[in-house]
Figure 1 (cartoon, rainbow, N blue to C red):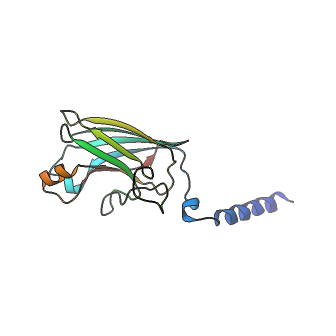
Figure 2: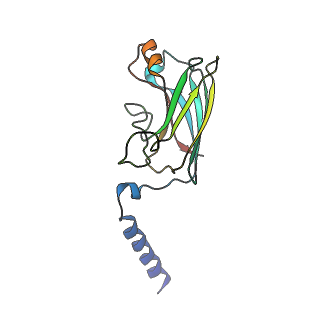
Figure 3: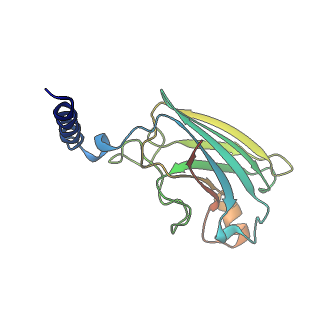
Length: 167
């Protein structure tokens, strides 16, 4: 077969194979590394104006997320997740990224980090999950505990959000 025909046949076969499968099967494994600059959300801009952080995410044979955070409430337990929306969405970050999009929004199907800040409001945390991220993962969101939300008189628990970028 001439090289041009072989290339065209390979392209058609690749397209046909890509059209098969469910939505979950169609999602592409990212298998790489991403970072996010976490910035305070509009809802928390007055309550925690100095809050910020970084996230480093790697996804190969599972997923690892490393957080480094400053400016949060001292000695407070927080939670963070990989989310399926961008930070400019309402709510920031959309919903939790689910390994099985048809499964429950619960432990074992999400990337979740629990951590407690020190007396200066600083924290670092690392968590690993057995599944790989795919093209539905867009951001990392840090959630405040319910008591902190109530103390601040806010309706949102999303303190920080950062969009994932390659690198």
